[in-house]
Amino acid sequence: MSKRPRAIFVLAAVLALVSACGTAKAGTALPKGDDAADYVGGKFEQVIGKLGDAITDTRDVTNSLDAYFKFDDKWIHSIVTSARTGNPENRVVRHRSQKNPDEIIDTYTPADGAVEYTYLGPFYVTKGVSPTAWVSEPKPAAGLIIPCAWNGVRTPCRMADSTVDAYKADKRAVRGAKSLGDGKTALTVNVPFEVFVKNKVEILPQSLLDEVGPELKKALVPTTITLNPDGSLVSFGMDAKFSGDGHNLELKYDFRFTGKASLQDMPKLPDASQITVLPDQAAKDAFNQRLGEAQGN
Image 1: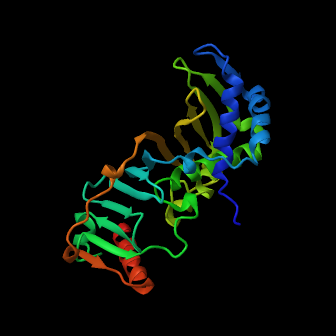
Image 2: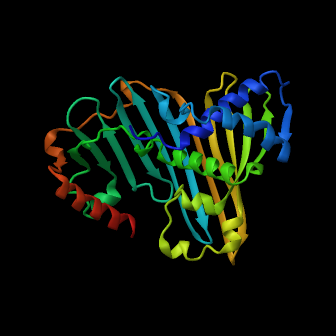
């Protein structure tokens, strides 16, 4: 059996933190700096093998990810919402560019049947990616057995991987924990930008990566994990603004669970005549190539 993604570690760890913080008064600041590393680090080690991952294992939920990245005058900003419900699951992911409202990509994987669907916004249809907005293709042969491969949680999984890597490299990366006024708990970890890049939280073009020098690599990205009193995940965020190597960089990623999902969250398919069918892998590869070329323009 293949190992579960490393993203499991960070969420399992903070679940243990909550039980340790449960008696703290509202708004109480918990240990910071080196004390926090000792206080929280032991919790990481205790639960690292339990394989409990709030990001990928939570079912019948809706999620949202607000992702913003700016490098000098180049920027991208997108909002990704997703829903998963049922057993076996129905899943949908809706990607909306905040830079160009016509850049829309939705993916829908119904529980039943052997195909899944993609909906393309006007930008991609105009670019000739597909003659119709809706496209169908065979479901992957391996199904959905790799939790972090699903677009609905891929980025937060990579955020979690980055947090774990930062902690493993230096336990002092854990900078603070705080009991919030509403009973929630927030844990802050500093993630080097080099680790953010390595884990592809944002997939950057090589031309931009070539501009990332030693100063930017060492820059720290504060990462905050917020939990409910019962230990369930509220949100997972990265937020930073820094300069180095002659460049200015800003990023903000906010992932959170937003509610309970139902079949009403799934899209309604159009008539079959309005769906372009990709019958095999060769057709899928050609479609993905056209899609990639359109996204690169």
